[in-house]
Image 1 (tube, rainbow, N blue to C red):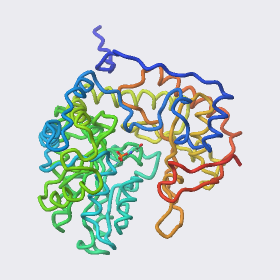
Image 2: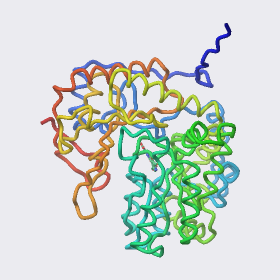
Image 3: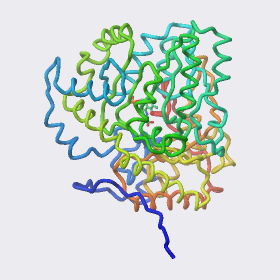
Image 4: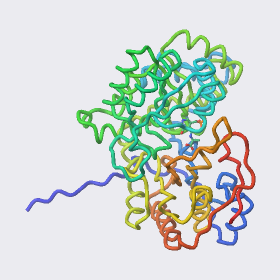
Length: 460
Ligand code: F0G
């Protein structure tokens, strides 16, 4: 009998240089996490074994990108690398005008200042921390229009990043289109667990917003991962290249902010891209105030070269298949241990449901913050809270209480091996086995903005 075997994915690269990791003891880690106020952001990277804090700026660059660094043209104005980056963005994403920024929030700042007036409403498919803060600082208010399924960690909807068009319709009816400068659409929604929006939903959204003359601004930080899920799950896309799917996604939007530190495989960089000349004109004016001249925007020429190369590499089908494949591998291991995770498994990490992991803790005892500290203590694996601490406070001072109380195990791109994944899952399982004995935290220091970065805690 003829048998067909399932073929595994494997990394489409081999290792040329290694960075040695420090292994620590439990007493060392206890001291370190205490000194860090039980906030994994305040740990020293030296004290971390496997660093899953974020996929932001933590990718391994390819030999081509490293070679590109040597091609840096460090002229103050008109660097050759800028023109290469501009052309790459135009070719790969289809946006017309490009302004480099030091990272994503630099682009968010400029865009929010240009498009948002006090009293404006910005509907979007779930908030992101820095994005919403820039909207609020510009006088706007964010309204969540993502489908309800996105707030339910157990719901297996294949496109939990989708917009609920009825919610958007309602926002337009309540506030009027004139109060809505744009709809903010993230591809592969970070805070929902790395969940994609479908092409069909984007198309419908485009039709609805066009009817009202409302722009769509695209947070394309993880657009390649979103394209992979469309390739895998949406009828009609199985034979299309990631490159063409990404291009199509962008074609339904009017501009984008990008943190190139994620999908675009660089350690620093970002950009603002728009199709509208007037917006570009204003952005070109503002960028010199906040970032630098419009042909470098806070970046060295070499950074722009590495970004251009990284963008190209990020759109390779084999790259993105292995990227998401590794995340799925880790997720399946955790599921086998019975650990509650957000489903479907997302694109950039595994999101553990701290509410179900530590059901005896109320949200005011910071279950996700607690769990991140416990995982670190167990193994030196550093993860990140994405729950009530990250959600912060409303402009009126009240706490946001998000439905999702998650710990993010974020996988840097091209950095760790499958054996690392095993160690990570085993650590989560060890903490899960003694979950009933874990006590919560109280916040003892709270910064004013984006408190999750610097807040300090003590054990209850
Ligand atoms: N938008 C999304 C969806 C992001 O995930 C981030 C950053 C930004 C914008 C801001 O970009 O950091 O380059 O200024 N997310 C990181 C994370 C910090 O860990 O999820 P930035």
